Image (cartoon, rainbow, N blue to C red; front, side, top):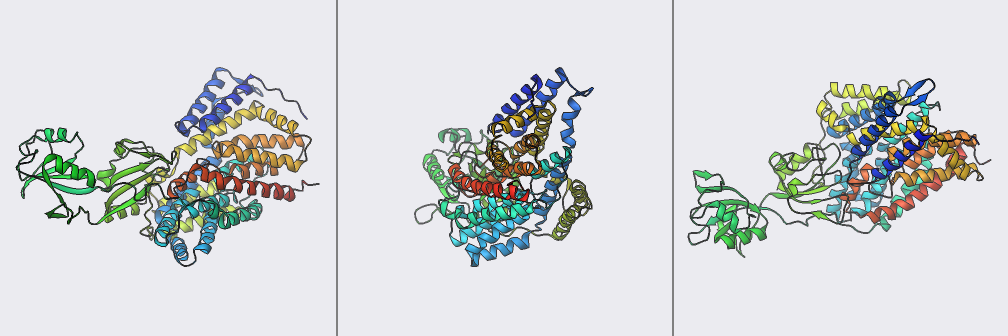
Amino acid sequence: MDTVIPDYHGIAVLALTGVALILFTRDKIPLESTSFVVLLLLLGGFQLFPYPLSGDTFGRLDFFAGFGNEALITICSLMIIGQAIERTGALQPLATLISKAWMSWPVLALLLTMITASVLSAFMNNTPIIVLLMPILVGVSLRTKFPVSNVMMPMGFAAIIGGMSTTIGTSTNLLVVGLARDTGIRDFSMFDFMLPVAIVGGAGILFLWLIAPRLLPERTPPLSDTSPRIFNSQLLINEDGFAAGKELSEIMSETNGEIRIEKIQRNENLVLSPFPSVIVLPGDRLFVKDTSENLKHFEETLGATLFSLSDPDHPIDDETPINEEGQQLAEVVVTRGSPLHYQSLDGVNFGNKYGLIALAIHRARTPDSETTGDLNKVRLRAGDVILVQGTKEAVETLRDSGKMLVLDGAKDLPQTHKSKRALTVLGSVIILAALGFLPISVSALIGVGFLLLLGCISWSDAAKALSTKIIMIIVASLALGKALVVTNMASYLAVSFATAVGGLPIPIILSLFMLVMSIMTNIVSNNAAAVIGTPIAIGIAQQLQVDPEPFILAVLFGANMSYATPFGYQSNLLILSAGGYKFSDFLKIGIPLIFIMWVGFSIVLPTMYGLWG
């Protein structure tokens, strides 16, 4: 085997790669921030310490090239197309069919749901598919009384399996295929590796259908009816009560600042704003909004009489309990691209804008805890769930806006007259790329243009579809991967791996490398694992003097096996919250599924490429 000696540039890049991989696992540091710092360090390091390369200098222009990478442009285009499919409700007929199947044949319906998720995922980003199917599963679960935790995770994992099967199924696939093409390996066509995925993925889906639901404990979604309701009420100020004749500031002080007064009604024609200096008179009605326990406490403390807003003539007592007609509870999941992502409720003016009250917030990254205190100040992240209360109309308005994922499942997703246009554009993009008439990057970008022209998506929605996190981590990973190759560190790692396993048969080496990739992708970003692993895979194949294609596919398949952790794949965070899962549930199902997929590909890939001889 060739001897490769790394220089100080290569050692520095390898050290930075190690630091980046560690930082990618830190939840408190946004992935885009880590990616940006990595890019800055690469730019600064190679600017201060130039690296000569065949008479030229490797530097900033090479690192900036990631922003114009063909795979990244394709990924962004497909994200926008997926957003248009979601916004127009184009898949609603299919969702309705699945919903009906669940009511009649729940066991077969689970298989149908998983197959649907996997097939759709071969051509679309996983997240819109999960967003489409989650409210259906939650709603059917409420009506049929089966635990949603038994089906949410199998559905999510089936979508990841389906995404492996085509070059456009996931951003990981596009990156690996693009890097292989840039290295001089042949350009994979859209369905080149669908057969091995169909064989091995079929076994994985059977496991998810027949065994996984039996292994999953019954979990209750974290916020379902667990938080106290908020009631709109009135406090009638009695003449002999504490509040009579007091300034509003004194009343606030008496309740330790807990009471929230929206307005003061003095008579039928006079409504006062709740300024601290306002003097409250007997007969005034204070309009307040709080839990039933707090309202009764305010009634006793202020010497007032409590009334429901919906029944202002009968005081609240044992015979007339407090009530709030027409109110609903709903769980809202924060998704990437929604107005709440990386924002607070106050920051988006949630209460006034949507007419809903936040009762509790469940943090996706810490599934055993809920956030208390001032919920409106909490900075939300993808996968967080907000329990909200409001009128049926307000909940429906929020759901129909298409901007947030509402999990009450009470109403079908909207379908518009533009849905057929969006499906036609998606189908055209796929057909043109599959038949080789246009590269997928060109057909996808043209598809975005037609969606905008046909009014299927607006520029603002298109911008929201683009994930800063995905863009930055791809650019930073491409920069790291390029630096590893140029400095010969990728070759050094490939030689080291080949030397360590040199006495083993080629199929075993291929299998071990794929296992390393599957472990890495559950710890760091799947895109980072794929970009860093691809040049190493090509180097290993060159050292072993074998066809690099099976090693490239080992990276692609291994980097997609993001089943064992909730942060291994972006859609895992959504099903974590919606299913009420714990971290251990992902290990319980994810590890056996990784084993099945790993063993399956370890047999199928060497067979396809004749490596057993």
